Length: 367
Image (tube, rainbow, N blue to C red; front, side, top):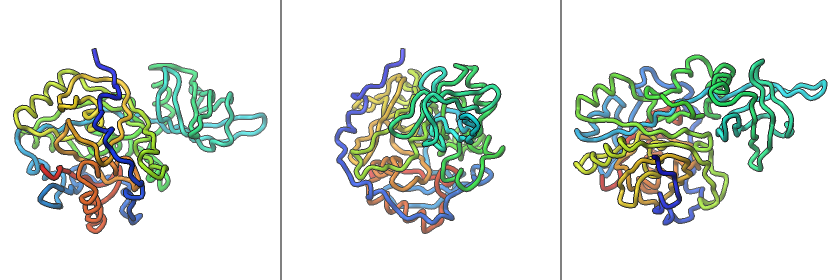
């Protein structure tokens, strides 16, 4: 039976100091925001940063950057078509509504962000299709809605799949509409378990040929699950890190996977999280000693400088939004000075940013 997440699971986070969020801000030229991924996936660039400095590679070079006995850990969540278009009817008046599902609360209940949120009232219905209707059960203080649908469980999943489209991040959706290409571009090669409303984007760069090359070099892989929520990628609006409240996300690691990862490190291999979402599962499930055990439940782990990492030796991650929790996680892993140097280099060398952009392989200073 899987253990539930508890605050004690990541007690090292309690040593994190309260820091000004401005420390994680930077200027990014708009033309570096990637609106489409490169094709093939393995044509993406790879920034490698460790104790020896920064190197510019491509993702096909990844086998040369690792060594036999290392283990890559992916997130096997699958993005659902969580963006819904519908109408709210009030008497003779009709208003178009755009809703983005962000967290499942029950079999027929979702939390969602909607526009125009201020014109919607509790008790009203939003009609998304002939087969999909949601009642506005509540309006939360953060502006989100609790939507109670007319279906539950698998029937609701099927109705959402029929009516919805891929929920591209705001910085892409504001510039173009989602289309059929995104149905495959915004899913990883390992996507299996429905539930995410955003992709674990570091894994978007992998395909079967790259995985075969890694296997040939003695580099193995494993999977954990974290159903990514929209809150993961939102900028922090508070002035300091202590003022930010993380949205929780659900996930799991099974006993067999935990045992494999423990064995890798015991034999001198390194565990590399492919993406911050896989990293958060591993750090949530790890004991203070770094030993992993089966875990399943919700985690709101918030990693900022001062955090002591226990379960990973390296991380692959794309280039993130200014002032975001993901920037803070990167700074926690590599240090503030190296984080600034990495991002300054990425801008100067015109790496492509965000979900459809390029990626990085980061080692701690001692790595």
